[in-house]
Length: 386
Image (tube, rainbow, N blue to C red; front, side, top):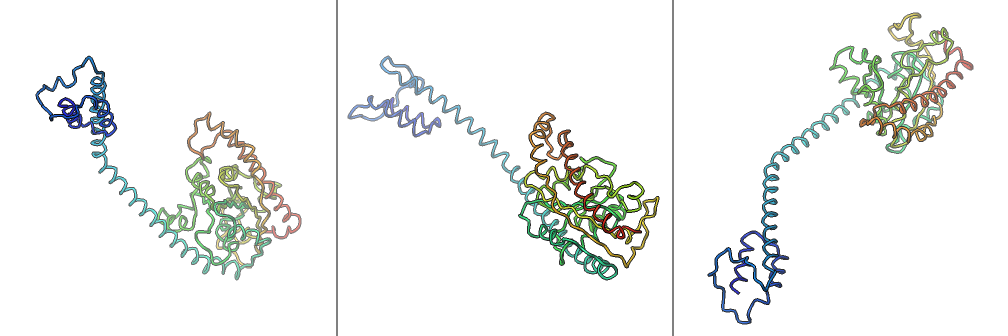
């Protein structure tokens, strides 16, 4: 009994506090206890506690278990100390991250509130009076657009495409197209060339263009420039994005010179649509005429005649949605393999397979816009007169 009790005490003192071990230890040594034990006698030296006995193999097993337990307990203690040492740092980092996120969200909220005020101010006092009093606006199939603005399911991207006739196409056309009052969070995202975007400096760009959901674009750079990726990301998340796929102003006199009804489209529109993979996008075309008389461009030059002219009729024809999902689905596997082979990690970085899809989508958009333009050129050529 003295050896049994001493072994139990030593095991507990050495940190082997597993109940499972104590139960196993007791059951294996129970036969060594006499019916009337006289109490423990601590007379044997410590090193003899684990000496082998010819009649028992339990001692060796106990020794191995205690050795493993001591090693395990030491490792756990080291890990606990490491966690304790790193805990304050991780807590501070978490607090800083949360605080930064809250500040960022609050600033975005303020920008949206300011943007709402700016849009209502500009739309109510400037854009709408200019369009509806000093000029006239006629919209064909207006409901086809407003239903998609307000009633499309959450998360479904809306991408509108149109011809580009003047520097005032944006925002004047959208003051006419979007039902009043305009809600800032329902506004479209649009692109603005960097020369105009930053013409009055960074502060003005933030207060005016960014607040009204404008995004700068550098025409000399590729489709992989960060701001165009940002634009594509807005659409992919279910936002409304408008793009002028011609990429520059094409007034009727210029189109006549080149025997066209629409300027050549750039593949950026294909990229914008192709990366709406989470939900099939609604791609809605419209064609407008009359803005070339509001802000005419000098023949042979890109300069436009200021101030804007009055007494004109602006006509907007909204078409039917362009079906592109079949192209996206057909190219999905090839795009996935191309990305894997290239080791691409940025989902908005273009591969050759992506560029092939962009080209196919761009051709389909061009066909839809050309059909709308031909209706005007054939049925209402007077709308295109200078």
